[in-house]
Length: 337
Image (tube, rainbow, N blue to C red; front, side):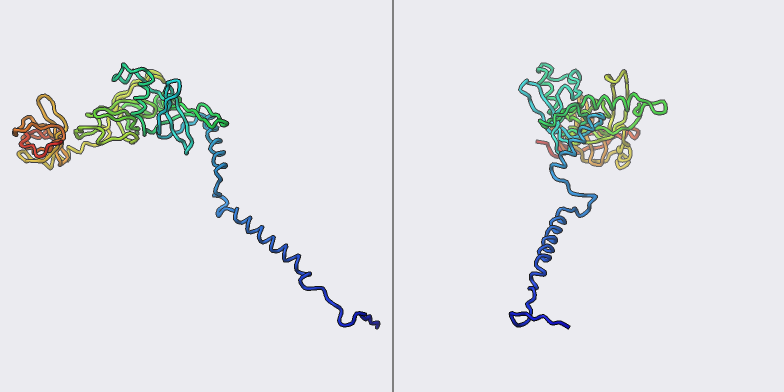
């Protein structure tokens, strides 16, 4: 056996332990940091990864472009009205927080159907009508996109004509989907004190206060709001073509008459409290608190009742078929000021 000796004396020096592990440790720590960073960018659920703002915008642009190509009907609330330098007006809606403008002449507004303020200039007439529609839910089809300028233009007219074709003209089993006698969902697009406008699958019509509810209403605005969805019954329907469809509808005919049941709570010579809802030349209309419509043929009080006054009413006769009480106002309990 041969031995080799170290001339420097002592034991042969070993490499430092740190030198053996230093590089692997650095690599290990670096790898761990990288993995932590990678994990921070991993969604809790890969199938429901949170999108960045740019990704959301890109996806929305794709949806709008696809909707334009397929002419898909979209819906949104009418949020604003703006006047352009040319003097014309545009309606503004927001679809998934994206601004879309609709020119007034693409809102399918038939000026001839609005017989009030006819002396106003055309653009101002559009502005007046659109103002009444603020808050209404409307349909539209994308008609133009400028991604560079981030502008999108829509047409309510195109959407309404498409719905007219689908629901009033195209037939299923020999009949259109909407016919006389059908109950259909409608959208309230404008409300006044005595009349309101509703839109039913692309067709608008006016409903008067007498057809808006079984109870006698003094002001439609106390009961209905723009943006409401309500069922109506189609009473009359005339379809000439896609551009000319006339509809007569009733809200009250789409529901049961509660007065026929409530009238059973009343008796002849009974005295009840009610509110004056209207005045005619010879009669006063009262809505009793028990849920019954009443007609007063006389007033036994020195004070003449006016609309919204609270009165005491005595029943002299009951019309069970129509659920109406006939009688006399004996006293004005509280005057409306």
